[in-house]
Length: 219
Ligand SMILES: C[S@@+](CC[C@H](N)C(=O)[O-])C[C@H]1O[C@@H](n2cnc3c(N)ncnc32)[C@H](O)[C@@H]1O
Image 1: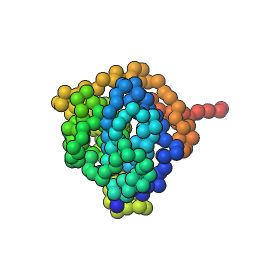
Image 2 (image 1 turned 180 degrees about the vertical axis):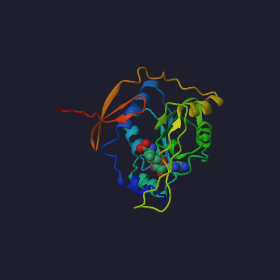
Image 3 (image 1 turned 30 degrees about the vertical axis):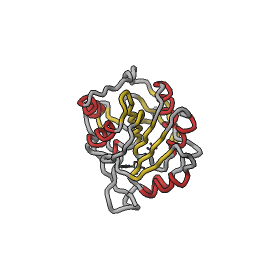
Image 4 (image 1 turned 120 degrees about the vertical axis):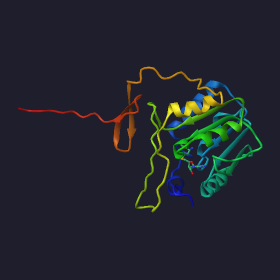
């Protein structure tokens, strides 16, 4: 049992997909790539089931997670012969296939040093293939390594909240001659509203997350 299985076994994005699923899917559609897709840290396979509906022209999907419980659940839900789920570590897996798109969503923040994960992914990438990484990143050149322990649940420290600097990730890819083809966002100071369980909050391109407070003083 992996320490965070209790979180991902309880979640259910089969019927109500996460917002980020739509975002990544739309970007895959933009680059008009087809072929085989690999999802690393796929949890219960929700994203692959979601993608299969939209990417009909893809011929094969593989999901990898190191949690036996999550992969068992993904396999139980899988009805398609074009989808395969495997229990493997994303840092050192070996497959005899190469892929046209590799998704690393919510996973890179588990690694203090993402070098092995990235190198292993590149080894499984076809020529002209793409790696999509979605996570929390630091836009400044600072790597933040976080461990946390939910004392109600566990005696061990868990991972998943590192904020790597985008520069650190870019440098690893540049050494292998892979470049980020997306232009940086302009005007990062613009704020947008996000709905949370605690009400509406605001976020912006500086990675700030905040609420607005109205201060009123009376004489
Ligand atoms: C935050 S969840 C992200 C799930 C999904 N990719 C998404 O974006 O909704 C992280 C997943 O990565 C898995 N994971 C963590 N470390 C891993 C590793 N070394 N190898 C494979 N999977 C790992 C966890 O079991 C968990 O399912």
